[in-house]
Length: 332
Picture 1 (cartoon, rainbow, N blue to C red):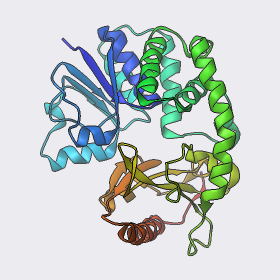
Picture 2 (picture 1 turned 180 degrees about the horizontal axis):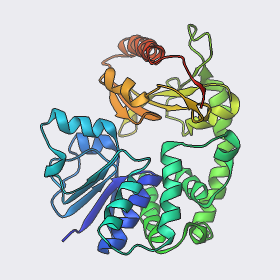
Picture 3 (picture 1 turned 180 degrees about the vertical axis):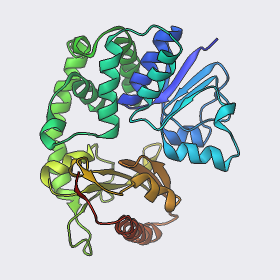
Picture 4 (picture 1 turned 120 degrees about the vertical axis):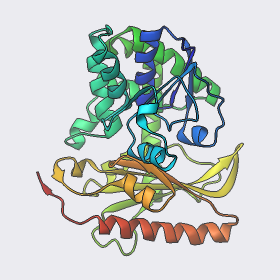
């Protein structure tokens, strides 16, 4: 029936793949980012299950939870009813997958419920405080292991395939006790200190952001893109409401003048009634997509001068759209 799972290269993608792997006993798992699907860089057939990624031209089952991907179907005149699988606006794609099979009476191991609960929180960044975010739950530790550096992309994907199998077969408490997982967790902890130092060096607020609401992490000065976890910026600027990372894109290891942007809301807004929607900002600018709480986009430039100009313009437009969504952020 289905022979391969193509899933997003993050924690949510791993858990989504683990559930599908359990149900269909699939061992072949491939990891991808949204652009790989949009640019049709992967050959996909009806024998493939696609999770947490844009809808391809063809697949066997599709699971997703991104509002922008739903809008894309509308633009392409594709009805959800035509697609096998499930789409729902949930905190994680893992939740969509879990509910799909549960509603069909398919037995799922009891430990999947906790695994999916952790995926919900991690993917939506739905923490109530910085202390809760930093608490090392089993899911958080597994996510640390994913964030640890790997010598090569091939090695990272090899680890992620192993992780899919472990998450499929074991509760997260047992997964984090495995030697290879523990090694990567410890590696991440060491790398986090370096990331905090780099973030401090490359962070600033826009001159017209008088409230200091959006932390800008500008990595364009680096010849190689540094590896950081941008949300660590909240440890340095705990009162900020969002963080925006901007970096150059690379083609086969060569720095280009194209820019990548990723943005996420602060934990400070999780307990408030607000109208911020980062995915909508990216869609409004026609540069990308995302959730209300996290989004990403790409800006293309043919020269360094054009890149610098577009970077300044894009930061200004993002801030203007941010303001247009309202300042109200009262405690719920």
